[in-house]
Length: 446
Image (cartoon, rainbow, N blue to C red; front, side):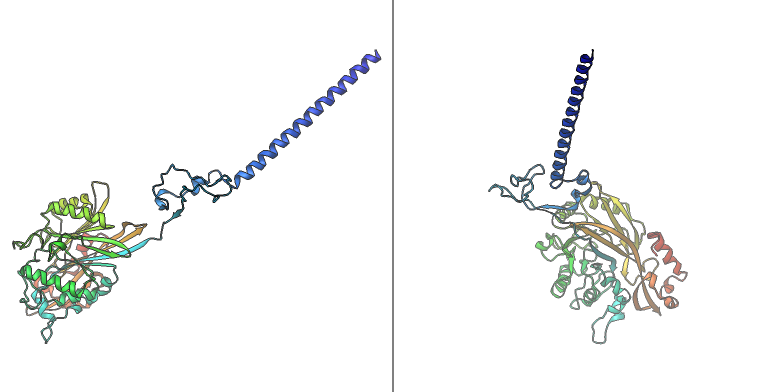
């Protein structure tokens, strides 16, 4: 019996030793496997993106990624050698090197101002004529010069031809202003003149051409648009460059006061829808931003007509980015409209008169469009806009005009109110009338 018990005891000891050995071997094997995976994970961490990093750090498409290799498809892969750690190992002879560079730049801002009709009546000419027969208009605009000069783009609607003294200096209804008007516009800082107005042919083709020749010879930095002295110019898209950005300014008028066009290219007309559509199409191909400046609407009406509304939609659907209207001689409101392709297009229906001798309310109140363009990676958009206001001051003694001045409405020197000549024609005029109309046209403008 004792021997049997000894055999049983020996068997149990051998069984325990076997279990212990198996457990030790299993532990060593598990430890080896864990060490292998730790080393592998460490190695891979040096050559791969951490989990989640691709989603958090990868640049969006809109960030502006430039690929230096041409015709590279998004799915194409590049092999850089056998060693995955050596990104720039020896490559096959026919492999293309791909470099990715983020090109998102700091935004560029372009400030634009535009004013309405520079309507030089004979009464204004007389007040600024010098003893030597010349004219000097600068003092009229001195109060607003800084606002104009500070803009990158300053647009003036030159309502009447400035053909010079070789034609008689005349006022309504057939205008001709001195060329000194153009000298003043240049000194103020205007660098775009819209010339397609109903008065463009008041002195015929020669008067129109003389105006253009004077501007182009003395002030080549000023972009003219809307009237042309050659077919070649007529077919050229007028573009101004600012901060490396191309801005097209297209100008059209509803008519020329029943004066027949001498040829088919002197004046852009709103009735030529096919040309407008083609002009805007070509402008979008060659410019970064497209402005359309129509001379349209009903005189002295502070609300845009149904035709203005319809034309605005037409311009927007053709591809215009900004619409700035003139002609009614009074201010009309601005609004955003939606084009057929979903873009938001800003419309100033009328900026009224910049200066005139129309001594009536509300014709002496002018509008000033103020727009800031934001440029990011070549994409141009309107980031801020407002409709501000000017007012034409003058005195009137014995029914004779004098002392014309253009002020920003908010900066008008109230001490001049008692001498304001508007009371001669509008005895019940009240300054609050201007403020109320400004608030109506542009709520919160102050």
